[in-house]
Length: 172
Ligand code: FAD
Image 1 (cartoon, rainbow, N blue to C red):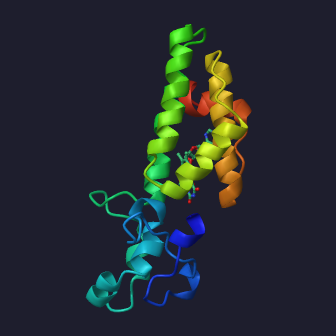
Image 2: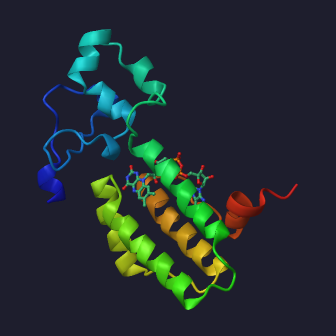
């Protein structure tokens, strides 16, 4: 299904954005599945408005009052998830453990970038949520985030530092 729903948009893309745009269920380019740069570089409307010089627009990232692209959505979502981990109890009750597992399951099904969501659901099947303590959940989430980092070619984060990054602040 992923392969079928992914195809090049009609407009020829500049070389640096040669990857085809990911389409949504409606067959239109999916804003929350593509970067703003990729989206604008293939947007006929924007190209018509600004001539061929879409790169400076794209390089600035999406304006704050525009729909989220895959990167803005991702950054905000990781902030929410890691901050939930930071506030998660050190010794959670059975109910709290059940809540976080249900939340992560629902999150993975509702995540607005459908390609990201499919991969995250597969990750949850391979490595189900561990939430017996704050430390355990924070480490599980850090590993899950690193799995996406690896897929995208981003640096792997040192999970020994997740609490400093998301809960206590950096040690001086
Ligand atoms: P982000 O990866 O958003 O990270 C934000 C900050 O978190 C970093 O600056 C760093 O300080 C910290 N950090 C980084 N790694 C870790 C870690 N392992 N543990 C704790 N803190 C960390 N994008 C795609 O293009 N394709 C996908 O398939 C995709 N899947 C995603 C799945 C999920 C569930 C989520 C939430 C996002 C997904 N994204 C995906 C978005 C992607 O992960 C990034 O959020 C986006 O590319 C922006 O990256 P960024 O470099 O700003 O940093």
